[in-house]
Image (tube, rainbow, N blue to C red; front, side, top):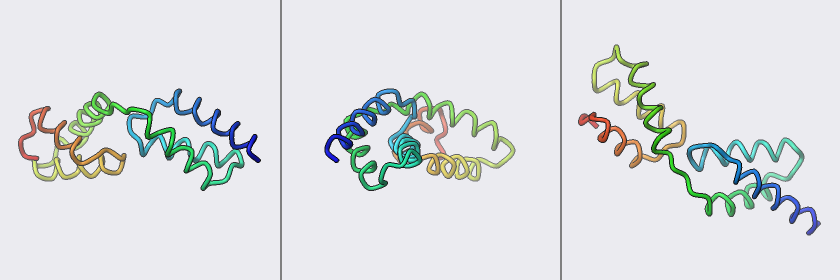
Length: 113
């Protein structure tokens, strides 16, 4: 059993290092599904992923800017209030933090935040 957990730790560490997801929540969900579908126990994988992902640094800034630009185009027909509301809602669903969203929207020139 210990050998299996050590092997799983190595596999998770490699998967985290190859991870290209922009934030913690997306990375955890993707990797969790990947390992559970291979037959590993959910609670063991979740605990090991938390340990590995906490040490991994995420830089969602560039990805967040791309998402905001895409969403601005998508919701261009709406008035400013509803446009910002829809953009925030979509970004929250993707797992971005409130402060990162506010900072990015302010930086991109949307003072209605």
